[in-house]
Image (cartoon, rainbow, N blue to C red):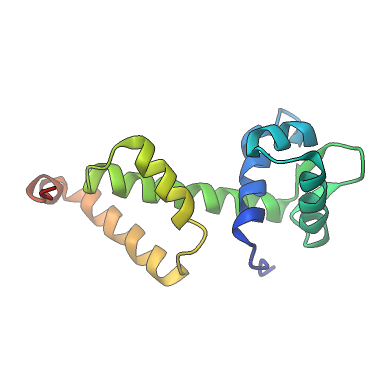
Length: 139
C-alpha cells in the first residue's frame, strides 16, 4: 500500500507513538501530549486523522497503537533522523544536540531522491573512513 504523505506534525505524532509504545504496542493520549508538549485535544485531533489514514488504531477514550503502515512510517522517520544526525556529527563535526535538532527539522521536508543519495553517500563514507578524517571544515 502506498502511504499517504504526512505533515511534519503528524510525522512527529507517529514518531512519538512509536517511541512511547509499551510491550503491547499501546500508548495513552496523555503520554503523547506530554512527550510533544501539546494538549490532549490536539492529540485527539491528530490521532483521529492518523486513524482515518490507516496509520493508527484508535477509539475515543482508548489507547492508541500503530498499524502496520504506521509502524513502517515511524521506522522510516526514525531512520531518516538517524541518518541526518550521523551525517551532522560524524562528517560535519556538529555537536550532538544541534545535530539532533536539525535532523528533526530536515527529516520532514527532504525529498526522497536527496535522502536516498545522502544515505548512499554515508554508506560509502562508512566504508572509507579515511575520507572523513581528511575532510575538516574550518569554522
